[in-house]
Length: 197
Image 1 (cartoon, one colour):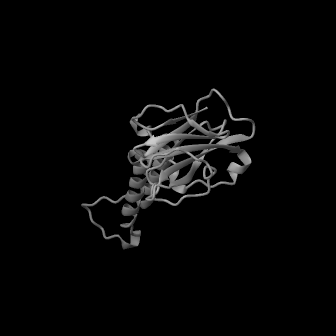
Image 2 (cartoon, helix red, strand yellow):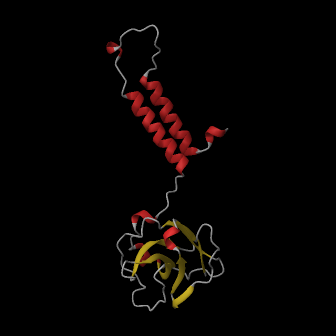
Image 3 (spheres, helix red, strand yellow):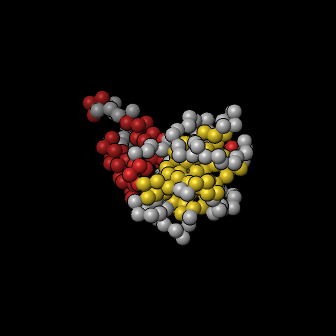
């Protein structure tokens, strides 16, 4: 029903079923994992009105499991990418895996999927830093560069009355820089790779 993927590793499709509505994948060597992809295999959809809450569990310093809600998969959103690298030192949250006797090794983390109603899933809040940004690093860099350039250029703005005539220097009106800045942002939002054409 589910699959789990970590970059550089084989796809896992044989989840350990620990209850009728709960599934677990082992993640050995979890300290070297940054992101994990959880997806539905497409063979069995969720029953109407149901979905899967996705949890990450890692052993704390005493070897006890710490579970954190990452997010959800549903028939309408059958896959999700989660960033787990920053979660290993966080606090645990409420989870449906507590009473289960799940076999685990101290160096192995786990991804747990709990089949739940969409209504109960809507009441849950995943940990904030598990979601992967939908904006790629190039777009983020470009946006930061634009902001920095505009702020830098604007810091030198003077009114016409404050200008000292200097025949050897060229001046660009601030509204021209602002127009370029807004135009570039708009084009970047429409197509982050527009500059390649």
